[in-house]
Image (cartoon, rainbow, N blue to C red; front, side, top):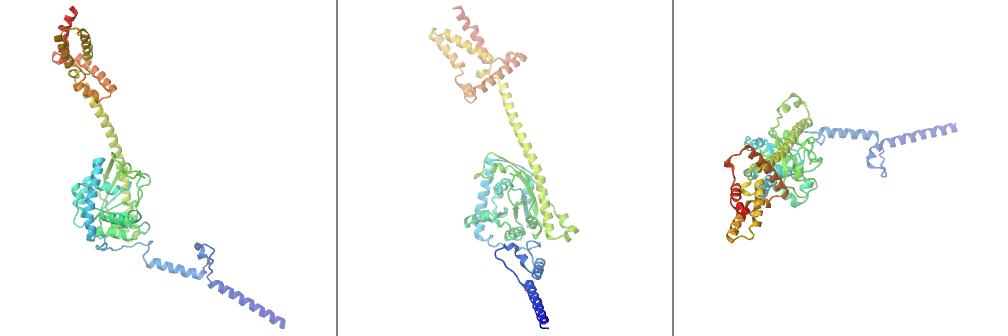
Length: 460
């Protein structure tokens, strides 16, 4: 009996120990500092994991986060610091100055070909009062704004700093220190932080500018092109929020440019000159069918943002194909124009009668040899005859006058080519037109010398 009691006691002890271990394993949280923190969830018990999952679901469903989208109202006086009196004074000086300098640089030292410029001027100057304007474009070079924007506006508009555009720039590039921050704020640039989502302060400031009827310019791609402007990438969701979360839907005007990759190549410290930039401005993008449809009322806010951004990106890609075609046609037309100009210049030189100037005529060549022969015979003649010879040299020498000037500006090989072509043209024209009215002064003097002076020399 005693042995059975001991066995039962051991059995109950073992059962109690197993139950104790199970309870400890169920409610114990094991932490191993030697393992990565990413694998820490594996050491939670199933009950703790279940409660943690419920808490995450509650937080996602109840609180707005980066993964849920909603309409965030922005007041008009949101950015009081940017609209302070000090920054307004700086903007009144810096914006017109930099804008006109960029305008002169693009239109004076470079060449800007714009198609549809009246669309931008009409949207900027003739839109209803308090109607916001949102311009979107591709991003090729770091100086797209202000160079391209300034080249599209007349100087009188560039002097009005209050009605010029606001734009966005990454805070790690333009607002890295107090000096650059003050400069870019004075030229109407708003800071945005990469990776902070579409509900950050910079986006709210841009919406507040639209709510006051201002003009905001944005690059929907989010960053510069990585292939030198050959393609246009898809638009980011942030441009959709600017369109949908403003108090009134802004006028969205797209334009695409090409050639800025030559003005400011990647890695260059200074912009280039003598380049051609082609800009194509499209029609305003309409979103009424997208916003007033039945699907829009049932769709989530994030899908609406994506739909607006997709339509803007699609329009930019269409304009990109067109502007590349226009730039190619313009380059071909310019090359043909240069060729036609050279041919017209050659034709003009062929048609000019060069006999009065002593150039390009076989009669002049024969006459020059005749004068040289006369000079050799007049070495021992009288002073009067020497005076006549001097008069002949002065009247017909090619060492000065127009002939020498033409020779000084032309290559000898080109001059001989023009002379050969002029010789052929003169010969053909003389074969067709043998009229006495076409006799030039050199021919008359040559006939006079042959009839009088050379006849006397031959008789001597």
